[in-house]
Image 1 (tube, rainbow, N blue to C red):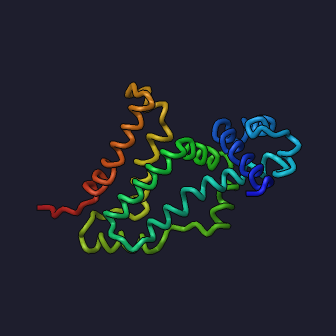
Image 2: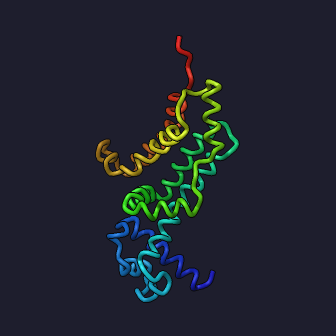
Image 3: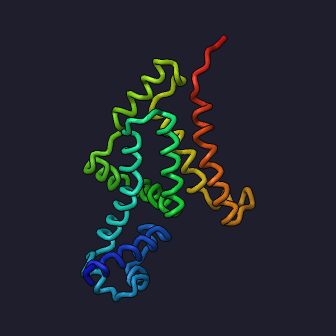
Length: 205
């Protein structure tokens, strides 16, 4: 790896750390430079301004989540397996980068124009194959009549909520960090079972 590329990556990682901690408004270029152990003029040489650097960090964060989720939804696998894979994906991703979901959600709400532009430019849409799969399962009376978007929102919400509300969860249940991780690992098993039990079609007698 070239020195220039190595420096660029070091800046990016420093910016990711600072932006996730302080958000766009709270972050300072000097703090990013200090975290990367470079001078501020070098930081501006690579990224010019805070807005450019932030967008690169934000874009990388969204790309870490959204394309992979859409790829799972588009897979030619049964619905039960698909739900399990979504939960597993979120669990592993947020275990590796626990601050990522809160950062993305907060910044999406702060700057909706930026996020809408990103979605449009990257052609992010819910796969039709997933919608058809859910509707076909409903018609075959394999699952209850639940709109595909509602089903997906239920799965994602159950995965996201404890991560985004980590401080509240730890305070409410008196968890230290180890207890919290064990709690998330337990949910990794519970969520797919909970979702499947909730959507299973049952004849009314």
